[in-house]
Amino acid sequence: MPLYNRLKEHRNKLGVNQEEMGRLVGVSRQTISLIERGDYSPSVTLALKLAAACGVTVEDIFRYEEDGTDKIRA
Image (cartoon, rainbow, N blue to C red; front, side):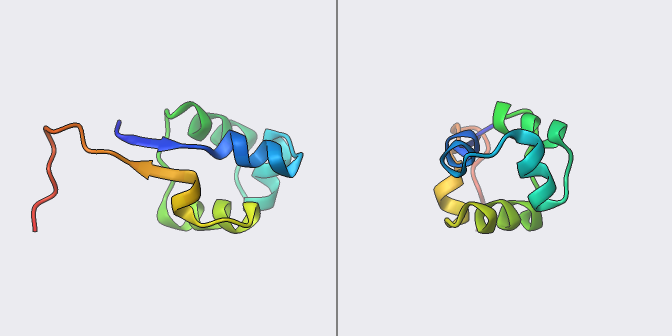
């Protein structure tokens, strides 16, 4: 999956654990864990909520990189 994130770094800056972050954005601790591990791509809504909770932009947390095989077509 070419979606990378820095959620754990931003969460740690806030001084909250996964459970507290989940509560802030309305998801479970497990969902936060899956996102941080890169095993789950959040919805746009959840990505926006996470960014707002961290006080940063979505782009500060998430980065998409193409791997060369799945080019976006205009």
